[in-house]
Length: 117
Image (tube, rainbow, N blue to C red):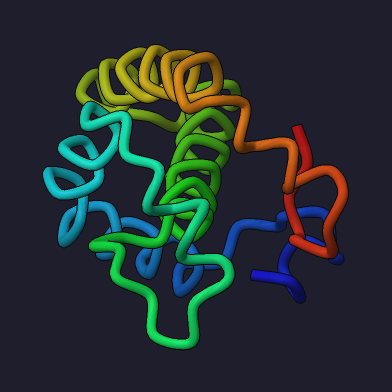
């Protein structure tokens, strides 16, 4: 992801496929974690053996990549109707996540994480 981000997020099938698999595998667990209002995520940052069920920043990165790539396809007229619908849902999900998790995304802008808000 870092190499891809440094290059300006050019479309790479492997990056998109990895993000898509991550989302498919962990989305329900991620949404359950998000709804729980759990603070385990914050405590996990200091633990040698995290107890959390999903990596918040890993999932946000996967969602960002997925959203970004589908948005590019839609904006270039190369998307299917289903992908346009997925983009609408993805945009709504991203907005909800950004406003609802105790402002814990501040980390993204103050770290070397390859994404920024």
